[in-house]
Image (cartoon, rainbow over all chains, first blue to last red; front, side, top):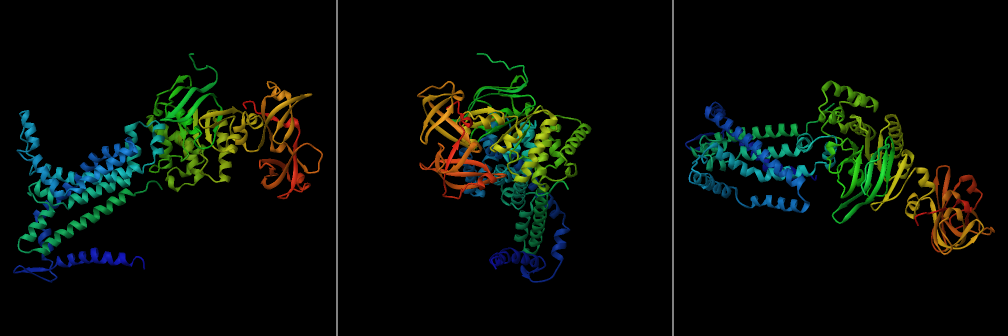
Length: 271
Length: 367
């Protein structure tokens, strides 16, 4: 009986909307009016379009690149916070990492435009040395900078927490068995913290895969990602059913990636 | 004074070693040698500095003062990965993400030992520790005793001259503990290498070690064979730590033949003068009488002794430890065989006289 509220919550806020989305994807639109229907045309229309698969591939690549890049950039910071500083400093650094969440992501992205644009801060700086301007705004690079900005604080936090749980005896035992510092990081610390590190990367993937702001305001929105494609479709002729198809493809992808990532994270070795 | 390592059979030499963590002095001063092939136990209660001493040998801590010599080489500042001092952790510190085989193989890989030789040496040690059948298992699938054997195999696979052990048996139940003690003892004898074994357990230390170092609050209280320490504790701390001795303190008031007469709170007792030859009349003296050397008799007995009331009894195998309380509330311990005790009414509350043969006294030299 205790789980009843949870069940109601799940039904009301997850399963029911999802089922509605599935139903919606079979509706038809006539004269800008949606009508309940059981029409496979929306699915056929979207899944046979080259533009959809281009956007799908781009979005998946961007999310993967963001997850990998963010994880790589975050790890040295998380490692230093977890292993190299005193408890007092650790508390302050974790507090500092929470501060970015106080500011709206949109505001942070707009401020990045000031850095990345042709006449922006970075190019002005390069100009001093007679370099540039380098095109950064409205490129994939710009999108990636935005996605890393979005994910970095969360990934550093998640990695730090998972590194905090690494048994310090294991680290010393590795050293004692002649494993040097860098090798210990790769051979002992990373495998010990694997679950947390994979889940941190998974969060980066999920956030980046569905993100709309960076691809639009830093990447220029062209070529479109799936999120941008959804807004385009809904704006053009009330095509909510077709947008639902794209959304369902995204949800299926995220569920699959999350499932595989967690399988990988918890994979047991040996017999 | 310049100190050079002795060329004798010492493999480890601690020379005025001090370790401080900020203001906290973990090891106040350690000066001792460990012989090649010796089984040395470092014993003390938690926080006495025994683990810190071991960690300094392993290269996991660096001494604040003093020198550590390993096999004739001064190793201060030498990282643990450059030393040949494998350690077995209290938590065992086995790598949970590696199989048994990969755990044992670890340090061979770190030394770039070739694949074929690795396999051979790993197999030899798995076999020796009787865990070959678990080679491809996960650590989480092993029992406590099996994990212990993996930890030993992992530490010994490089065939070091010295093995450091930090309370490795503390997680095992009593029965398994005794069995693993035998395993460790035999292993050390067969290999002929040095074991340095840290423990808070007297029974572990005394049953396995050739010599025992007793530490308290960062200081070494006594070093000696288990026999020496048991029969001749150096000071009050060691005597109390062993737990089976009655300690008396008093002042020498006169000489009576071969004995000093010592005035204590319980009365006047004879102590053989030969056991406190450097003392003279007026000196304070502390002596112990171990529980098994104490005698119990009915109160009317016409023997000089201490009147005390029985407060309890504890079985110790074939004997029992009787606890008594004197009028001033001090505790006395008497250990006797069950048959002997049956002849005496020693129910709780019974009043008895405790006495001993003066030859059974041991004078604490450092008091």
